[in-house]
Image 1 (cartoon, rainbow, N blue to C red):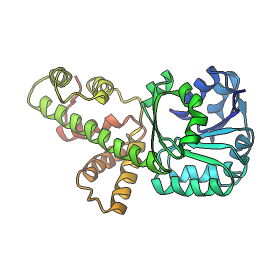
Image 2: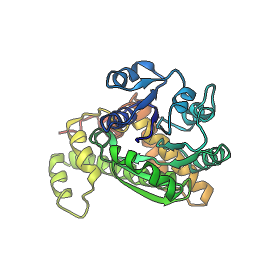
Image 3: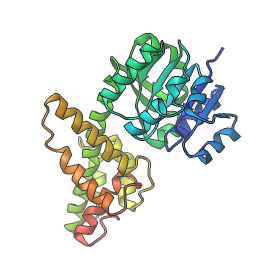
Image 4: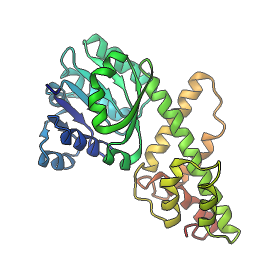
Length: 296
């Protein structure tokens, strides 16, 4: 018999993830801070809960994916929080991107309640969520992961057990640091090429045939060239992840030398009203400085 599933957080990533669980035949109870976003799920067979606690009470396995640490704390420990509704023996899987410290704190609270816990942030963007091709970075116990692997398989193509609780978040923050640097470097390179009087497509052609090719550019390069910044990963969330990565580095005594520069550019882009645009909208900072369009 398939476990009952609770799902909290129906944003750009959570909505398609929950839809894929419904398509796989799971009974899913959902909650979202903005109720209207849950209506599509209800129309496809999900049950709408009134609170995070009620969502958890109906679930053998509860998934959460919300925007930032304060949002996680609110849905877990706030009024009618989910942790109060989870039964002993249930599993909580948090796919939000938060600090490793928060993941370990959640794990400790879950353990005191007899609840199993995995931190399992994802990568793959909205396109991966819609196709069921996400990659999960997991921190926790192997036995717990085995329990939820069929559920992960409905939403993703791969998952990695990376260590104890907090390991998933550590790897996710480190990886997003790399992705942010790649996108920023490519945007800056496009600005240079454009200023030299050459079309950006020529840079892309060479990059895609060289050692410099990166899968992230397969997705972001067309957006940058077309000047389309429909959010797959909003700039404000990438900014948040960079901040968390730098805080983690500081705690570990690792000097942050490059990431602060990208954060400054993202701060400028946010000041231009681009926080809800895709993270590649950082190129608008260069366009503003050059007083020209870098796009094709």
